[in-house]
Figure (tube, rainbow, N blue to C red):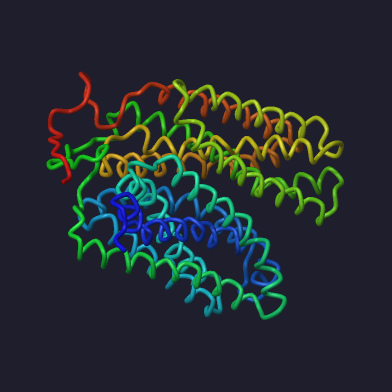
Amino acid sequence: MSLTPRREKIAGRIGALLGILLMALSLRAAVVSVPPLLGSIGPELGFTSFSTGLLAMLAPVVFAAFGLLTPRLIRWLGLEKVLLSAVLLAVAGQLLRATVGEVSSFLLLSVITLAGYGMGNVVLPPLVKKYFPDRLAVVTSGYVTMLAVGTWMSPQFSVPLATATNWRTSIAAWSLLSAVVLVPWGIQLFRDRKNKRPDTPLVNGLVAVHPVRINPWKSPVAWGLAIFLAGNSAQTYVYFTWLPPYLRDQGLDAAAAGSMLALFAILGLPVSLLVPLIVPRLRHPVAAVLVFTGCWIVGHLGLYLSPTDHTVVWIIFSGLGQGTFAIALLMMNLRSRTTYGSGVLSGFSQGLGYAGAAIVPLLFGIVKDATGGWSASFAMLAGCILVMLTGAFMINGPRKIEDGKNGPSPAIELERVL
């Protein structure tokens, strides 16, 4: 019995869908699986306060560097080859750093691992646009949800796994999750080659035969999304870095402080699932941004003014504020016309966005030490809110990254896919 054209079309993309979801699930493992194990890793490898701080900064810095580099690799190699290279780098880095005996090698191999995941961050939005131009909202919802699951899952299971074995086995085990990504993508690429799927940017069922060269440095859309992502990510990195120390300083025990961080992380799940399904229906996406910004503000104020009373309530509000990150990932496709444009926008916004976000957690601690209290540091979060809102209004209109001053570029020639 032959498949209907609709079912056959969906069946032809199963490998891509599984590959996208599994890659999203593995992207945060290298970042959030190590900090819970530093109590075991640090004494054995010789971590100091400086090297621990350096490790904390590696993720946003490496993500920023490879965010800017990856669009060039996409243009040179193609989306799928860049993705496979990213997976191989991530797997090799994770496996090798589980074997080292001193801190400098661990940090170097962490850079290699994060380089792979940084490339993966960039290629996911254009892969969604290429393979699922007719299902952008649903697939984006799925992969952003998997990001949230991975962010929660890695720290949740790293310590029990290390307790049952050792820290080396624990951090090496997450490489298996990345390696599995190769299976569905291998199947998909074999099918694409067999069916001669065009490896060119899609625009609503059309192929861009001659994609225009895009200069994101001159694009208000690209700058707006980068600014928006920087303001959002800075707040998230501050929470992941400083929430437990802050709550312990206010009188909570270590277990309770850790539970609050886990609650913050898991609340990314519901918003990640719903945001991509709702925001594309809005005429003005900034309306959704304002709702989630209100959640951030209530959470920040509650934690500052009453950190030990109703702490769970404040964490819930801040956790729901993470919906702004899901909006940022969705806009990489909603503010581009082609897969190439999506890749450029993804790379530029994540490159500059993570670079800006990397500075804030460091300054948060420096300001706290300099002032002897948390007030000035919390005031920095207000600055992050203003930065995020500035970017949100810049990307609120329907303008795309490929658009010139007078609308869509005439350099994009389209023909129907038969």
